[in-house]
Figure 1 (cartoon, rainbow, N blue to C red):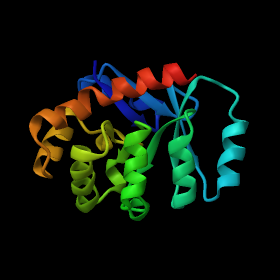
Figure 2: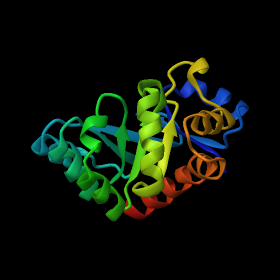
Figure 3: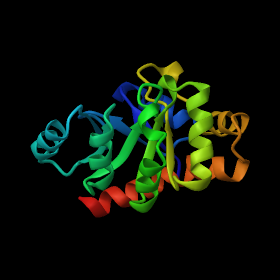
Figure 4: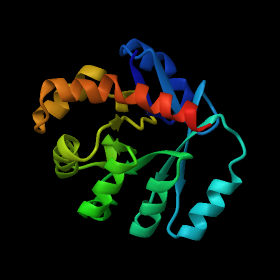
Length: 185
């Protein structure tokens, strides 16, 4: 079952299905499966935002530019995945952070429109050693921003991933996310 892990507009659902996905995760209040991305710059702000979430309908993601907040996000079971793009790759570079991700079996969500080739290549390298499950999200607001599953796999292979691992990340990592999220809620 193919799942697109980030769509920002519910009107894109018909295009998602046409591209071969069976389902999608919608940012915000729309859609059957919902995600909520928490943006936090301090530990107190993160804890406050987590405590404000009363609904269990959301899969919770965290995006930060602060290493302390990132460590807290990795430790929290309620947070299903950590968002990575060009703006916050610097805090992921430390081996202690990568080891925490591996130890806590945390999923990393790479936002394709906001990630450079350098970020994609780094994440692929980390995927061989530290990060078991990586999501590559379209984060589409318009129909032409949606990546088809085959395009994602080809993109990852062009950036250094082998076909088997790229296929695993696109096909299986979203299912692992769904399984983890249902057990956390």
